[in-house]
Amino acid sequence: KAGVTQTPRYLIKTRGQQVTLSCSPISGHRSVSWYQQTPGQGLQFLFEYFSETQRNKGNFPGRFSGRQFSNSRSEMNVSTLELGDSALYLCASSFQGGSGANVLTFGAGSRLTVL
Amino acid sequence: DQQVKQNSPSLSVQEGRISILNCDYTNSMFDYFLWYKKYPAEGPTFLISISSIKDKNEDGRFTVFLNKSAKHLSLHIVPSQPGDSAVYFCAASAVFFGNEKLTFGTGTRLTIIP
Image (cartoon, rainbow over all chains, first blue to last red; front, side, top):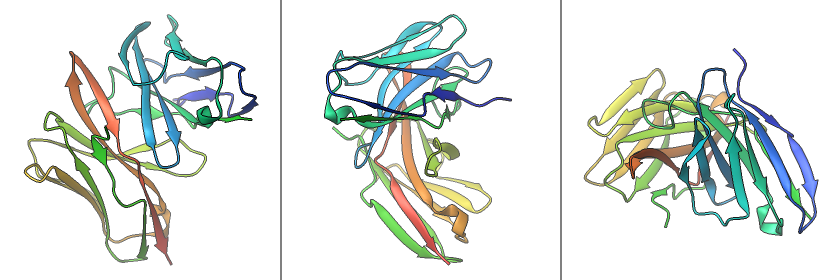
């Protein structure tokens, strides 16, 4: 079956712009989580959506937002981009949510560079 | 506050030897621990997990050990192979406000030397 698909894979933006990233989960998976990966910080949790509702949220400013559609596809948006937002943004899906019993399947990520 | 810590950013091991990756945590509410492996230009993939009620779980060349009293877990890879060269993330799962949440460590880059 198809894996988790993230688009675009690479993008370059300038400070102050906004960006939207897309994630298509594995068919049948209802939970979609977003993570930010930066060198030295590991994977920082952004938020999780389940059945179109935000179920969990990490410690990121309000410039980071997301949504989930009825087909479980998800988007995340970052407004007023800052240089520090340069990172790999990873989307992961699971049937119920990330836990020991419901492991996450990650996409390849969207590499955002802010100039 | 980093609740899951991987204090070694990198580790180099000779092919055929044992690789030991370590992870420490601070929250005693974590009930599951997982290891993910990440190659460049790919997303992390699940490797192995362990429940907090166990102290060891083995899957082929990979074994995870959990020491709850020390709040420490380790991943052993025996024997190490060149394909094991990757970044390894430790993760811990707990229920917060009714929802399960995964917390990841900062990762350890493992390099297997042929």
